[in-house]
Image (cartoon, rainbow, N blue to C red; front, side, top):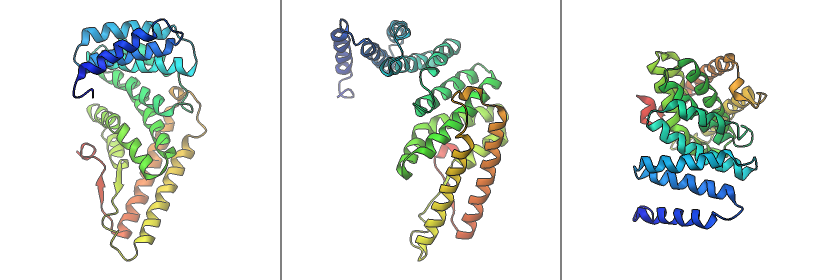
Length: 276
């Protein structure tokens, strides 16, 4: 409906805001204001969107710490920081993102926490603060790996891959732009997946598939084990954690390549952008 007549969704949001104004559901009002600003932003009405975001963000900062309050603050902070990043005001965006990062622990809303880390890394990268950008990209990628390993089945992992693909591409571009070619290559290689098209017609397909599934399960368990004892505050992770991840990633890539050679399976990139 919004695509056929964009004004309808805007009118609905304005009506919802007016309806909620004198109620006790303060976090709902803030959430609606955030969605209203996001709609204006998508309609390229940046000045109006920013005015709405400013009001919503001030209200969000005055909310409490219930799950509804924290969710409303995260929604507004995400949308507002996106506008600030798009208009190259990354220092302002970082001020907001660091506040929203504190609202959810990784164990509580790991996907939101991970997305927030990627946003922070993006702004530091744009500000040419390579050291901090590296730190947040590394932490974001590690939490993404945990989110992916906890996803339910192939469909769940594919959904996470799709959700975070753009952020991983940003990370790879950041590494390349800063001449960190080896780390970029490791990420590109670790984001490849075996295709079963070549083995589904094989008479031994069940055994082949089992070997692939067993190796995949082994690798996921290794990644999960690497980080399961980490502190809740992933900002404080030491650099050697990423070194451990790179070492593990290289080992897993060698194991995967060895199995592919033995099974005569080729690999294809998950996305074109990761292969270029």
